[in-house]
Every structure is written in C-alpha cells, then in structure tokens.
Length: 341
Length: 169
Image 1 (cartoon, each protein chain N blue to C red):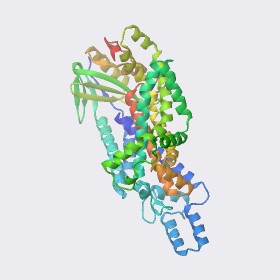
Image 2 (image 1 turned 30 degrees about the vertical axis):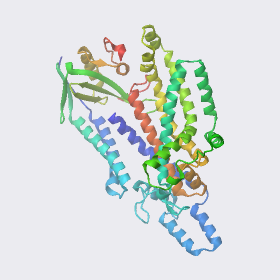
Image 3 (image 1 turned 180 degrees about the vertical axis):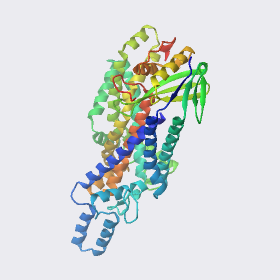
Image 4 (image 1 turned 180 degrees about the horizontal axis):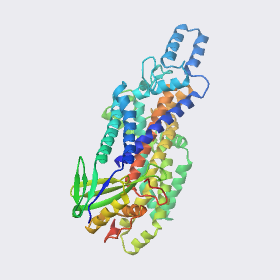
C-alpha cells in the first residue's frame, strides 16, 4: 500500500499543475481584468490618487507582465516584487474588489465549505447504503417502488429549486428561515461550542438540499450493483447450502457491490462542490460559492483563481481517498488487464 | 528443499529511486529553500518525509536478498527478518494499479506470522516462482490464503492446491 500511495501522490503533482494552468487560462480568457475596469471608472471620475494605488497593485501582482510570468507569480514559481510569494508559499493573493488579502476575504468560509461538503458526502453514504441494500434485497416490493420514486424525484429536481421549496415551506409552516449556516449573533465571532452547535443545527437543511440528488444516484447505483451480484452463482450455491440470509448478503455480494459505490467519492465531490455553489447563493450560506460567483463576475482573478484551486485540490484529495479505499477494499487484478513485469 | 535466493533487480530499483528523488525534489526543495507559511511547510515537509522514507525503503530492498530454505523464509540485509514456515498464519497476494481500468499494476505478496510481516513486490526477479513456493509451503503448513489472493495467484500463472475451508474466506 505504501508503494501505491507514493505512485498516487506522484500522479497528483502533474494533475494539480495542469489544473492550475487550465484555471489560470480560463480566468484570463475574458477581455481585460478587474484593475483595467477600475482604471476606466476612476479616470471617468478624475480620481488621480486612487489611480496611483491601482498602478501599484498592477506592478505588485505583475498584471503588467506577460501572462506566463503572471501565472508563475500567482503560483509562486516566479519571483515578483516581493520575491517568491504565491500559492505555493501560502499567499492566496489580493482580492481587488474587497481591497484586502484573499485569505482574509475567504476566512472562515474555507472551513465552512469543507464542513458542508464532507457532511453532505457522509449524509449521502449514510442514507443511500441502507436504502440501496433494502431496495435490492426486496426488489419490486412496495418499499422498493417507494424509494425508487423518491430517487427519481431527487435526481430530477435541481438543488436550487429544492432549496427554494424548502425555504418557502419552512417559512409558511414553521415561520422560520432556514437560510444561513449559523445564528446571526455568531457571525464574525470566534469559534466556540455555541457557534459549532449553531453551525451543526443549520447544516441539516443545506445538507439535505445538496445531498438529495447524490443520494438518489447512489441508491440507484448500489441497487443495480447488488442486484447483479445477487444473481451470481456463488450466491445461489451459498443459499442452497443454507447460509443465513443476512450473513450471505453482507459478507459477499454487498462487499462486491461496494466497489463502484466507493469509487464514486471522486466523482461525487466535484458535483457536490459545484452544486453547493448555487445552493449557497440561494440559501445565503457563508461558504466559498457566493464569493466565487462574485469574483468571476467582477474578473477578480486572484480571488476566483485561488478559490478554484482550493476546490480543485479538494477534489483531487477526494479522488485520492476514493482510490485508497478502493485499493484496500478490492485488491484484485481485473483479468484481461495488464500486470507490470 | 534446495535453498534459494532472490534479489530485486537494479533496473526496477532505479525506477523507485527516481520516484523518491522526484517526490523529494518537488516537495522537499520548496520546504527547504523557499519561505513558506507554516501550513504549507507542514504539508510539503510531510510529503517530502514520505518520499524520503520511500527512498530509504528502496535502498534497503536494493541491499537485501530474500532467502528460502527448508525451515524459514528470511530477508537478509540491513534490517533482516525471518519467519519459519510453520509460524506463517496468513499469506496474501494483493494487486495495485493507479489506472482507472486497473491495467498496468503490480502484485504484492504479504507474509504474516510469528509477529513478523514480510512484504515482497512483483518487481522481485522471479516473483511468480517465489510466490508459488511461498504459497504452497505456507498452505502445506496450515496457513490461510483468501479468495482475492487465489484470484491474483491465478492471474500470474500459479496453480495452487485448494485448502480445506477456502470457501470461508
């Protein structure tokens, strides 16, 4: 396993570099940048002092340099006026619109985004596993039809629409707002047990909203995999030999059916992260989503780029976890595949 | 049984050294020569330490040889270990691949018993013959070989005898 971890880590290096290049190129694609737009505004207003600061920022962050050097400075591969001082060194850059370091702008939002996304993944697995096993072992029962119907509903309903519906009915029936991730008195406060409790209580609604489609997809996938396994000959033989039903299902077919289920963590993370951005806007969640959207609209390149790199890093880590779990769970060669000599 | 000896071939070891050097350079050089935040220093430093450990393990493998005789299987070298055949309780053959279609991977033989674990990678010269001897002798001494290991053993051309209770794995 140690050798496997080393091989996987080595693959992550070019992956992250490729993601950073793509992120930078995409952010640079639209005409102009935040500072160019600001200069035009300030010139129109005749504010010479502010123009000096804009010029200082342009030199400081190398926005007057060729794009390859801008990329190098952003990543920390190339020295800027302050030496090597980019993402690699832990400097996320400057948020031009907010006029403060990116790390100050994102602040707690990084942690809250991680909590929200990982809780959603936990919720998806917690809910979909028993339902998937139940649906497969009781195929065509009323319960199976019920969960299948709910699953299709979950797959077909966009997250933001579900968020709007939940917010509307929570307000109508209970008179409460389920937006936000904590009670207003904890906003901007240091972390405390009270704040943590408030965050956990507020997590319920967004986790359900963001996790519904993922849960529905996982239920369908686990059900299909398990049904395939249950029809195999070894299951029929074990049943004929009188192996107890619970032991028979959990020890062999469920274990086999789990492989694609676990391999999906890697695919689940990007969809949750991108899905949660829109839901965060609708539900006013203090996560990275709304800031990212705002940064992309205003062409605030360091803010958008750093958030995108963080989310990409989160996804790459998710893939790593998924691959490690899969290697531990099913270390079998696939016959027909090659073995290195 | 005639005593036999196996070694890791130099070419495979140099590939592993290469991996250790790439990892150490990528993660260790910034940690040492660039001013980093404490979080980045811990992250890159930790990863560099992992690759350093990998390099050390590769060097140990390069210098060691694996010996099998009538009574024991032993790794002779800097950190020698041995286990007698009758002490072996569990033998596993695991397959690892970094490709999504699980092609181009490698096998690892794990031998456990007598408080010792011996891990041998497929890069060992003559790995199938070595795995065949180990599995047969371990099975003959009552060790356990699970279904996954049997499946992988078949893939490298081993035709192992069945054992009582194999279906329980």
